[in-house]
Length: 465
Image (cartoon, rainbow, N blue to C red):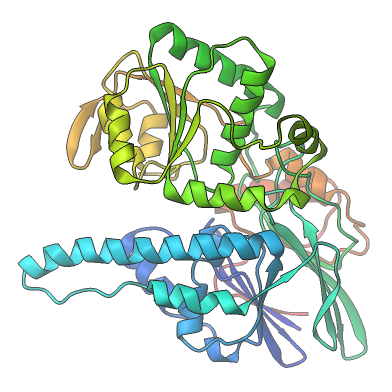
């Protein structure tokens, strides 16, 4: 057995790990690398460490773009095998890949207008809507805890990772040369007690574990204080007649916010102000959430018994039409506008920020991770002047940062999860999906609780088992 690390190595993007077992080739995830445009395009279009035609099957952990976003390129270059995933991931994958293809095409269309004026050759998108559609028939759904064979010597079982709807920890039982190996890939691990979803499940003990480490050295705010902080923000907006503008990822974060606001309005006397979810992708993703209650935790089930739909209530409006989105600028507060993207880099959120960030009655509520050099990061760092569409804006709105809703386990939660494993059985833990400084801190913590061999691979590293 051989493990080759292809993506999300000493970084948090482009998740991809290549397994060779009994001469057959498998991929764990096929994520899009996200970064500087030219560098990212070159990485995503070239599979330089293996031939896509040689891959026999792909096992997909969940439907975030950095885990599935480059499957259309893989298929375009010759992959024809099955893509195994949970039922919810299958449905979300269709939504996410179609949206990703649309973005690829629109971005290139915009760039090519400039290139045409400059007399330069046009660019091609990484993949098209047609390429994304070619992935859908390959998706094969499997239930949590349902053992299935991808080969006579390789059995797979999914456990709930508690990260996003349908996210899975992949457990493989492998037989090779009269040896048995228990192997697992964490995907992205969620947090205990997050709203809506079940907690990450404990899996059987393993010999080898590929573990994410996004927040290996960082710690989140307590999730229990989330609703109280949201209530404080709502109260401020009501008192000021202001708008709350929330950049939020369309998948998971938007649904968590809607559910939290629903609970606040049902359990407190705060005035029911209008809530607008302004994102076609968020609307489509929420539809998938409604179709998969099997992923919900007990609290959400009880809430559904009383109120039926946790993602739809009086005063909540989902907006898909661009003209209806523009009309929000003419409405007076108080109100809440939730719009993508979460890092405030693209999408309708840019228009809402441009129209509201210079008004001191308004609030910009930041609720998720923002990478360096993104507009969201500049807002979090409370820069006094920012640029939107090339224009400068003075930040007069109040900026409030709330990081308790992170869908990734923090250092304590990752350490506690790993501490469930039998340390005598565990031979190697490979740390992926994290910046190197976070991985080093997490590695030290794992060593301190008795784990021996902790490996932080570079891209291209190969380990023979």
